Amino acid sequence: MTTIELESSKNTSYDRNVEVKAFDETKLGVKGLLDSGITEIPRMFHHVKDNTETIPSNLKFHVPIIDLKDVNTNLSMRVEALDKITRACKEWGFFQIVNHGIGVEVLDEMLHGIRRFHELDDEVKKTFYSRDRSKKVRYFSNGSLFRDLAANWRDSIAFFSSPHPPNPEEIPAVCRDIVVEYTEKIRTLGLTMFELFSEALGLPTSYLNELDSIKGEFHLCHYYPPCPEPELTMGTSKHTDISFMTILLQDHIGGLEVLHKNQWVNVPPVHGSLVINIGDLLQLLTNDKFISVYHRVLSKDIGPRISVASFFTSSFPHYASKIVGPIKELLSEDNPPIYRDTTIEDVAAHYHKKGLDGNRSLHPFRLWNG
Image (tube, rainbow, N blue to C red):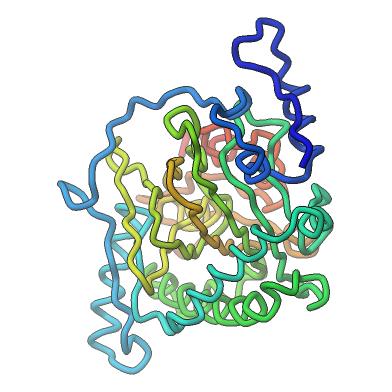
């Protein structure tokens, strides 16, 4: 490839917009920078250091791991799992699940398929590069690249599965079969998780799955190349998810951290597990009974790290324009609404406008007297 001239951090006439535009026009992402032989990362990737303490997961706090084995056939095991899920959703907003029904061979192949795509020949991969939000399959680096104060050290390919999945020929051949299979299996698991969430809230089992606003999902499949200066940047900056729920598949490299009691806690990879986290919209629906919490991914000098985040939220207009607000059955005189009624469309518009700026997307929707 032709190495582009990116502005030096020592240049006093530094223009971030010029650097970002030059980077985006290569259509080769962060991996392209690394392949060009850089030993120092461009200034556009420099992040302000976060001095919040990070603690290992085996000390003081550890993200819950919940076993879903036989939850659909054994009542006592379902009750036990529901108790753990309820506490995890209230106290952490994050937990890992094992024995979830998706075979480890499917999980591993999904990770391999995403890696195969990101390591395609440059000219082939470039054909998928796009910032057109109407496309069901698109490859890019940093979704809010032109708005964020600092870019993250990662590239991504997105697959939008609802209301209709992409045509198979739109999906890159190197990961086509596994993306189709994984999408079907993760959708089924999503239905199960929403049933468990409904019961954990004291609602009928089918309650959340019957809401039109819940219907829809998409995958963001990330590739985090090794970074020559990981201490200066982030894999993914501090943020919450706008979704109702996110199901994350991560490989063995690690780097995911969740903010718990004002400390960053490592979420260690467990082979065969999936990470579940509550999104902003479910926090709104549950009137803060379930919490959506900050999380981030550290940049590392090893890799690549591969992850697949499946977001459950409605991204199409018919459902996105519907009213969402705290579930009425959860409200009482002692638990008045904290949020005003709004639409997914409005929450999403605010989220995308602000980018990954580290601020909560629900803040404008709070009732100040709530």
